[in-house]
Image 1 (cartoon, rainbow, N blue to C red):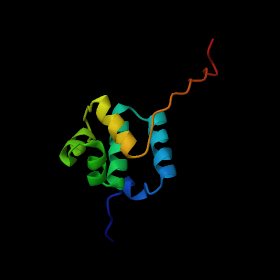
Image 2 (cartoon, helix red, strand yellow):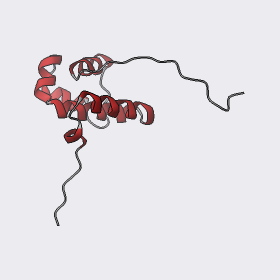
Image 3 (tube, rainbow, N blue to C red):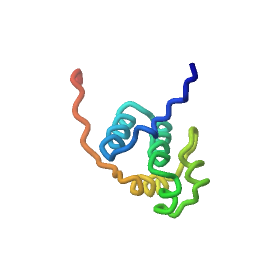
Image 4 (tube, rainbow, N blue to C red):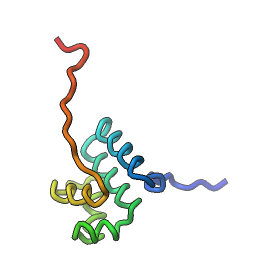
Length: 99
């Protein structure tokens, strides 16, 4: 029996699924996880399309959205806009056991 490597990008086929994925990573992940998640979404949409919309080259995108990368905030904002996302700030609710 032959198995294939799981690729989340194959399942990110709607704006709702993309938003759910990003929100989940924002809630549970760290900076690196978020950058990788944005890379998965860019891959699912098409790196060439994202490159055209951001004005960045495909190699630059792959490098900026890879594991261990530390892209500039401007790059992240361009990619988020190109994938149809935005950042919204909501107040953090008080913790239940706070004094």
